[in-house]
Length: 220
Image (tube, rainbow, N blue to C red):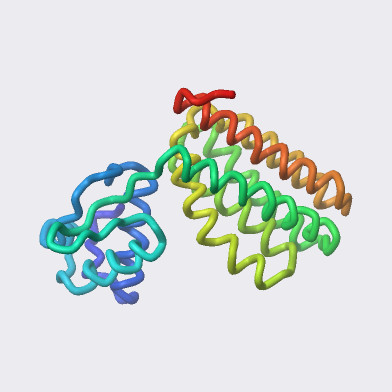
């Protein structure tokens, strides 16, 4: 985050505060189970309590924050069981997204995927793990948008935000494998090979699942 406070920005404060709090939760700066005190957050971000309160409400609907009456707000705790459910859905949805992206392949979509991959490669080599996680999400969103299905895109964004929370736990171990798996998926999409694109997307999510379970001591 830059030295300029969010209160000095001309953009919509609620959206800015929401994005920054989400980023801090995803990166672990705000740890799971940590209490969110509106006054402290407002002072740290250079804003009033109102946009912080609104942002906490939005993040609670996204599942990142838990609000308990008379107790207050805390960062939600993502259990292994919830992560497993997320992987189940990702396998189905991202496999479909890859298949449709290959079916509707276009030079513009392929170029976008390659640009994200190049940025991810540079972040991996530099060890910038937070950026690696961001580019991981960007890549999967780009595949969804290349699929050209508005309902699918609508589903993917909140799902991938949750997936980034999981990815951050294994980013150090997975960064190189994730990049190579993305490259393989990009090649299948660019070639218009629907079966191979779907298979590679499913294999990629399955590999991420195995890494996560190993990190949590639940390896199968």
